[in-house]
Length: 276
Ligand SMILES: Cc1cc2nc3c(=O)[nH]c(=O)nc-3n(C[C@H](O)[C@H](O)[C@H](O)COP(=O)(O)O)c2cc1C
Image (cartoon, rainbow, N blue to C red; front, top):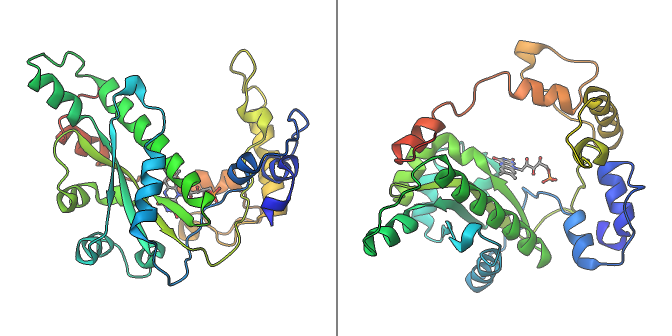
């Protein structure tokens, strides 16, 4: 089990070469390094007070200019939650999750403050959307780590944004408030799997950005991933056929060869954001 390994061993499994990293005895870091998404859960509920605690811990995250432009919607009412899961097929993995929540970006409060204090909001441009999105993303990450720290399994759900408009209506999201991702939580059925990541030399740059070797590095990563955690299913075989070698890069290239969520930009504009 990953938690009994040293941090170096966990990181090695994740990144391959971790020569540049120190080895530390630190359960907190080991927990984060060894984490993994879990999509299958025991049929056991999660106490609401625990969920509230996890949300409170997550909302303790840093926030751009202390603006706190992110909120969490806990889907506690079964009928309300069903309206959301009914947008998907009943086989969708998160339909049976013991707990579901939605992390939202909220740039509305800032405008409410401006209006209440009789000041103009003079920053109506892309930054308003961007800052709220980043704040929400940090809270999502904190939620994941908080949940895993108490033994829960979880997985973010951006597929919710395939139905942004419907979800916005169900959750009664006003202008300047938008869903960033859902999160499914539950007591896990299985151990965490460490999913290998691109190497540190690909993704940590020193002093300046440098990707001159990126294609060769990605090919190495494809191979490392194939050795450790091969893909069990190929995407869009009707269009691309079966590949003898099917690595991360082939999977991601196939995934993004089909348009996805093309209406999201319009949805955000309809929420009155100016994206320039
Ligand atoms: C913002 C965000 C949205 C995600 N949305 C989904 C999703 O809709 N469906 C899903 O199965 N996994 C989703 N995931 C989980 C990723 O697929 C997962 O993190 C990735 O495959 C790496 O695996 P790991 O989390 O086990 O390390 C999402 C993750 C993030 C951070």
